[in-house]
Image (cartoon, rainbow, N blue to C red; front, top):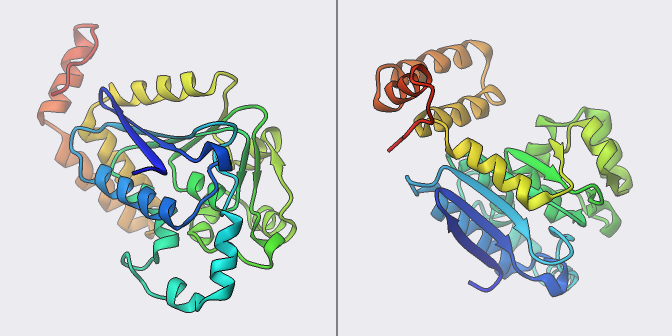
Length: 261
């Protein structure tokens, strides 16, 4: 792959968008490579956390302008309407695939995070942002609407009026405002160091409990209260008495770092 780099750092996977000369602008090749990497990591039992970042001066400045021309000139319906990944098309899976990865995904944001780049970041579980980051739902600038999973992912984080303002205006938002609105999890001056520090903290926890927690967090946004409560109980029963649970208890009693398999 040329658009995306995948590196394993112990139990942490680092996924890096790799078009720095284009501010990591998204083209068809990058979409397919990001989806392929996400689907690969979804099946890796030894991965315990994922960090997504962008090479160069930006996380991702949005869709490559040349892609707009291709869509306008061709039959957009043939590209956009087919459901190629369950309920999603290939563009939506670019962001939604990270919800399918069973371990926490951390997006490390810097520079412009616009359009497709913002929707990719929304697919992560946690978003860290350098103080100079700018975030925007940019589609309205081009006479379009968010269509890469954003309309599923934004309501999990934003009030309806905030979401409306961002979509209608296409105006970039700075980190202090993004933090206040809940669009960004944490500001990080030393961005990558903090991203990997957080990933390593997560990777040191019980792997079975972390995966169970991600399933529960996802269900909390999708199901009614009774279903969520039942899921809590099922997940807890599946953890109690198992090797990861026993090691976590022993490590706490013995005041040492746990040694999970």
